[in-house]
Length: 276
Image (cartoon, rainbow, N blue to C red; front, top):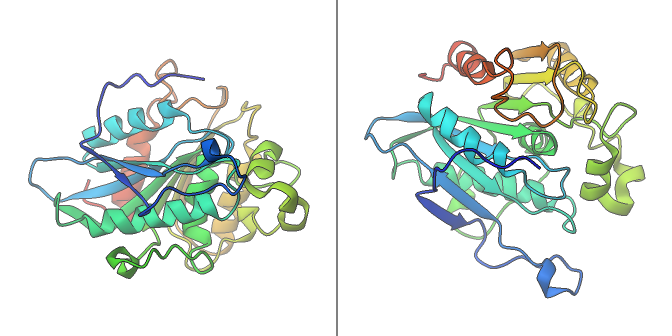
């Protein structure tokens, strides 16, 4: 597993829910408190928001896909937040509930740090890409209420950035992520939560990037999601780089791929109207 390069520390780490969440296994060591790590800009100027979901096959959270991404996008003019969401043994819909709750909490905090709540993009990698894509496709069916003031805020993102995402649990999908997320329900729910099947008229504009040689999560995942966006006439951009392994994050050793944050920034500016 790659270690993060950034030494950036969160200004705050906030619990997503009022109480620690039980995994339902009977083992107290499995219980977890999902957190929102806050990396806001503090220049007193209004900026867009990026909410980041690291990957890890719904089994762990790869930290190089969290704080490193936050630091880079802060340089590009975004307030950044990293979501430490629940993974196995927690099953669907708990990671998705964490994701939607995080979006609501960030919008609730908008006035504190001069954030633009209507310019909020999610960014996810690998299985974190599936989680990010869930926020743009499953917003009508997930209940993320906590019985507090945050429930009144919109939980659908304005845009999505998906890096080598797990999209499908079908033939070209990622079986391990499906097993970790859905457990014994995988066979019954495989098609339903293959998110290329859930794109619709209200799916947010989406920027995707992948490598053609990704052996962990095949590029077909991004291709299928892009094709579904095109079918539903939703704004999208897709960059497929010729070579590179799975899990590159910022891809610092690959100058040709390392431009993807700037490409994503340009997409948010030109296709979504974000002031970047």
